Length: 493
Ligand code: 9WN
Image 1 (cartoon, rainbow, N blue to C red):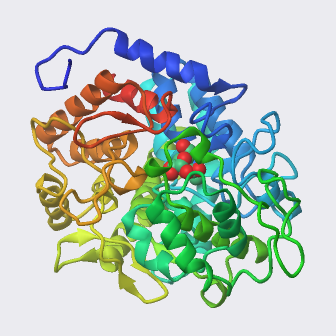
Image 2 (tube, rainbow, N blue to C red):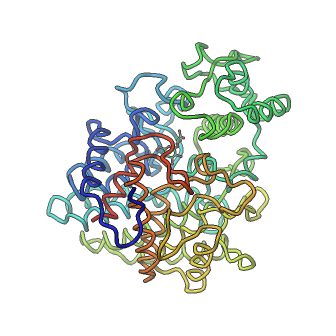
């Protein structure tokens, strides 16, 4: 039982397992995150995956990023899902019919996409892929990607600067990539639950836990405002043809994630009913970003997404220098993002970064792993670097030079810490990888080494799972998960 303590040898076949996992998930021009749960292309998954491919099949790293950016919208947004037309309708919920991107001016006519974004890890990933395997072809690939990466940043930092303070704002928890993190509990509580999805879930009620069902039922009666416009279309998963005018047939929507994974390890039905309200609200506004304050019920500035946006400007400066473009504007923008993060999302009283809910203009109370991610910024001031390291080594997260497991996604000491439920406790490779990179950036090599060993030990013990029990290391979620494999290859390199 190899538990990842420093000094132990890395099993020979670990890299081979990671490559086999990526190979099995390769699909024409992209890598699906998981064959069962996520049979399309996801935005930030593709970035993490490109980092891994660069170590073994660099051509795939560039094809991965290129195929994603082919689906970029005219306004610069890179959609969080690019739907594969070869995948069966209904294999994922919510599928292309609900998003209805083809009807939007500025979205590609094909392929179908979602209208949301995810953290822009792509420029850092492209730079990392280039550094792992530099070549003339790789430089040409960087040059081709560069305008799309710049447009992606412009969309996030200008069009999505709803709060006016220089940070991008999320319109949906899915945009954070950490969907049901306790970070979103307070802002999400103000979002009405979609009554059609609730009715469909109550009708099937096969997957909800007793507690979830009770909450769902209690809320259903009040959850009407805000969804009157109706979705107009169903997902084909419930046997219905969509929401009928003036009512809404139960069965128009049904989750499919809980057919693959234990419902107790996923977001609740109530979460999903709110996620759907937000999709329909944003979609019915034409996915426009003007006047969101007046008409959209979830607007939050996220430390993870914005820290990654800052890191992206640093990466773009390096890319620009490499391809003969001007790095200066990227350096300026990077400095502005770091400054805005510290001004708007850092709480000196608790020494933590936390999301800002724009509807109340307050920081959310939860202390989650999201608050550690600004460590990736090379220009983060020393006071905030020290504060993040102090938070990470505290019993809340347990970072150490010798540690049995990587960091959990949520404060271990919190009353709502849930070691099995998705982003509410389990350990994830991508958050730990970002933190590892941040520790290296800031010269905390002993802590970085401890974290690295624990990440290797996690996968050696349980395989390339989607997420892991933060105490036992048991694998959770999907078994052959791409970014776990890809980021393992990077830490092994
Ligand atoms: C919704 C694909 C994606 C990841 C996200 C993760 C999960 C989707 C879902 O899977 O989200 O986008 O259906 O739960 O939360 O980070 O990109 O791996």
